[in-house]
Image 1 (cartoon, rainbow, N blue to C red):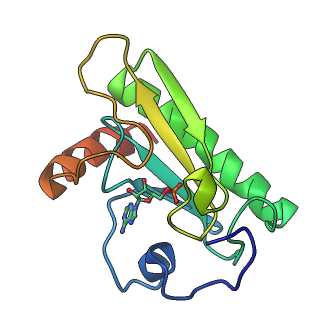
Image 2: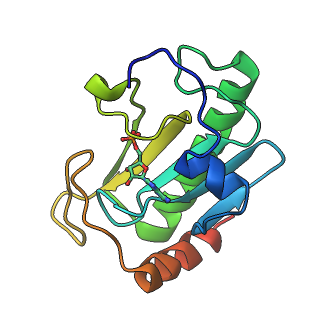
Length: 146
Ligand code: AMP
């Protein structure tokens, strides 16, 4: 999909917000939701989305929604650091299929990084499908830090 197009109400993140498919939630407030990625690039890889914006990418997003999302990104990054003690955390966001975007509801990735371990690192879009029980255990660790 290109940078332009209509918002699809059946995209996976819209379905999560509608309660039609499950997610491993880390944090939510009135405007944003954070949950674990099901094909994580590393242990604790999470995503933050706006609950109300229909922006597909950063070019379309309302300034208010972007500010709300980024405030939650910071909260989740801090909680993730405390819970999992990574050596670094990369924050990423992709716009348009040629840039690697696969879900067309604006989202920001929070990816813990370790110098040597404990978790391996996969490139964007290359993470293995996660075991849901393992995701739940990681979520419990991070959730305890809010
Ligand atoms: P992007 O490639 O930037 O559009 O990122 C989309 C991300 O969403 C990928 O890392 C996927 O693994 C992740 N993803 C897709 N569907 C789900 C889902 N139902 N729950 C959690 N993460 C998902």
